[in-house]
Image 1 (cartoon, rainbow, N blue to C red):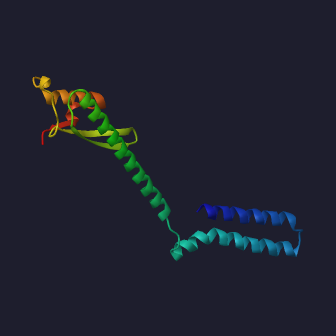
Image 2 (image 1 turned 30 degrees about the vertical axis):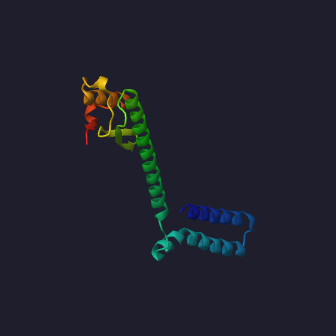
Length: 158
């Protein structure tokens, strides 16, 4: 569509230039008529393309698809960074070999964490920590580290 606007403006400018340059008389009338027909044809070019079926808007869809793939990739990368950060934080707190899985969505405000799952199936918990409530402690660590409410933290042993 941008090319169409440029061609219409170009033919109008050419018509004005010809009107200024040509002297008054019979020739000027014929040139004005011919250039007016060219301007009309330039204006009708998109209509012909639509009727012919050769006008396509696929490029906008491809651009949207590429952008959504990029956003998905960014979302996955940020989820992975959250998971690695939580695994490190839990290991520093004494909970080693925890499996952390973050689920988040990327929107206009940024990354919104929907759920964080911590699987303690292979976790190594030191003997000195046996008297505390492990699930509550892990929930507190995860919710503080990610800034989410404790209801979004799911602890499982399987």
